[in-house]
Length: 410
Image 1: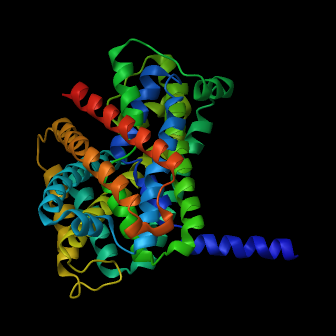
Image 2: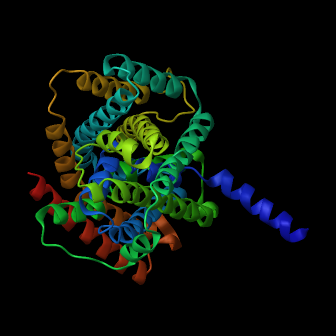
Image 3: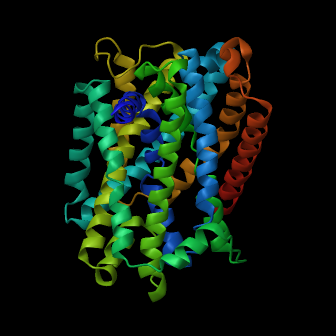
């Protein structure tokens, strides 16, 4: 009984801390990411699965440093950048982050529109309804309620795992492809290889997770469980990505069916894997897209308000934090309006967001590494030599891959 009681106490403690890592990593699988995984599976079968363990390692290393800085300092990343580097560099970083996040949100609203159209709901009706629902949730709900809803949304990503099982893949081939790297000289394969690893980390993720750690009130005493939260989030992200690749590889690839968007994959699954697999895939896309259009504008509002010392936080009222909620609504509302614009070149918008993320990522990662090694800020929670070696190597790899992806996309 004592053993069982300790288990329950441990689970309760973890649930009290969990949230920032799982939510941040889950939103990494946004509508744009799901499109990338769908294309990888449909065009190259299981061949790119081996990139996912590498992506998970990169995600855990970078996001653990983010969570640790938030828990130890009690400050958001934008706060620390302003204090340590001054207002002008901070303003420049915030300007690029705002544009990148706005473009990312537009791409995710396009995912909302595409998923709704699968269910025969026109975007002119569906997009405004979703934008209004997200706005009401954030304006009326406190941090605890919103975090619980976001955690439920993270759990709904299991729909992709079920969709993969319904596709009846060759599990032996899946296991081999996940651990044995393969190489092809095909330029499309190279682009997807870079995309699957290089887009694992986006600048908004560091700002959001650290702000969420601070908003939740986590401290250095919670670090062990915060690391578990981060690692679990990364595992969920990779499981979802792998499930999407497996589902499309087992069904679309053998029939030579090419897709360009996630909603194309959802529709194509119906005659090959059955209507349930198609429905679950479409519901997963809808969940991911709505989740993303809530989180990325929130990340933007947190970062900019912290950078300039304005009140921010989901437990504050609109009167207490008008700039925070105003920024959130501005990014959310204008992104939704842009998606409703007829003839919008969405591919160009997505490339622009990728370019801005690529330009901002090196600065954010290098700044993070300087901050996490500053003993005045971190005390005995600075990186050790081994951690620094791995973190620097991971950061340089991500920067190179992001740069290559940008060049290839343009």
